[in-house]
Image (cartoon, rainbow, N blue to C red; front, side, top):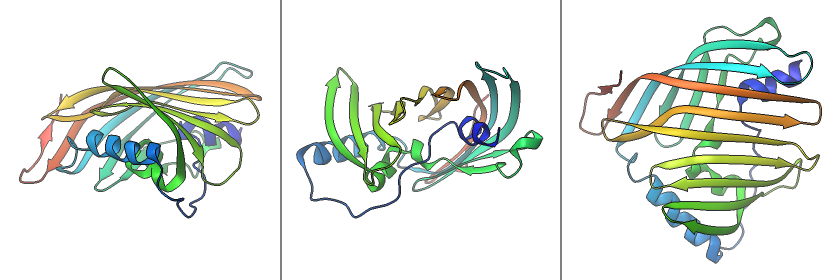
Length: 211
């Protein structure tokens, strides 16, 4: 059960350990340009907060369902965290979590870029952990407003797939909803998160609030 909570509540898989970066390559250089472009609209953002509502459902035995309330916080440059108001008894210790892996600007520190392709406004990346471990590969999709999908593929055949549906608040692209499927040999979990009441502070502003 504690293993379930680590993967279910975090929504994303743990990233690999930091390692010394290799010499620049053509995919890495092009990916750096993509990261710069996707971050251009959020560059003026100093910070933002949002209310968070998450529904979890275990699609394998014991078929649990539970709902969590909390909030998210972002602080420039790449500090992104989740804070739940209350968690089930088996989740004590996971009320506050860092979610930086969902920030593309952090990826070069953790991953090597294997390939990059484009389909219209969407860019797809195939990546590998800098340090060999349980993660076989990472697939990510971005557009000019940021991350739209990321999937961690595991050597044991499991995967964690997160899809982001964006909205725009005061000209800033932010998540409206996120859907995750966590399919590992021992269990299968789905999660749906919604975000509301954004409060955004940008350079030269006092803040903006969404409905």
